[in-house]
Image (cartoon, rainbow, N blue to C red; front, side, top):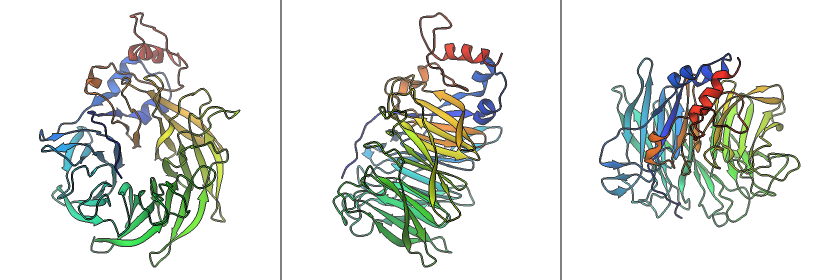
Length: 441
């Protein structure tokens, strides 16, 4: 199985002091907005031709890892991943370029990434070094000297296909999706779980096969680990797919606990595209779910599930925007404290947005927003991550002339339509900045 490939140079938008600026309240001038936000690109070894930079992304503390799976290294299509460190008073600096010690051309190294502490896992689901398209996961460790080095290669077990299409690392557990696994049915999928021992070595712990017998269930296309719980998505559980929850026993075996589905399923709602945790809440993105009543448009939604004292999960809320008409709301999610950052990664230049919400009882209140600063090639918001001081929005489909585009900065309530306030004949970020300067006055 091969993954679709595009060859566009990409960028990441770094939003500085995001929480302070858009949650803190009060009037913010246009000058202050422009002073506190900036656009940041990447400087790397010229032997690497970067493509799809931001197709995957993860953040832990002040370290960010970004995948670029269709990058060329010395003319060979292998993929790459990049590590950045945020230093107070200095900002972002590139910390490392991660490359596999050995792989096959077209391995998609960097299609998925996960970081926790001094460990980074990078997925290469099309790696065929061990077996054609079986996939592999590469482990990198940061040493006391500050250097990142590859310390292990995890091969897919016999029968697994496309392992590494998704990855999550937490504590001593690494879950890797293998959506092309055929052992239950054609492309039914599987989740391969590895465990780290006291010496830091990873070994195979369990193989969780697709819980339903359906072709093209793509089980494991999304995985998320939360303590001794594993969450994995499938596309085909009736009526429209599900997120399955597994428990880990002390002996390392994983058992099926329950299945989560939305209360108002839409055909191909893509429920489970993104999964995030906020305390005992599980937040699940469905970028093609119904977003309005009556159920006529499928622009997407995010569903909130609460874990009860009886260890069940109950749907307690839904975040959606009735005014949207194009799918993509809930494409990716990131949580910091009580704030949820989510993206709407489809549409036109003025309809791709990222939003910040916070819970208020059973309701979710929008406290911030920012819209697409690029043009028609943008995939703004395909991946998002959030930290106490900043949020980062990946745009792996952007063209190189992104830097020639004027900044478009958003705060507070999403404007329904933006007029040409400056009168220059162009509706752009300068019009929005003038509009924002007057909010609250």
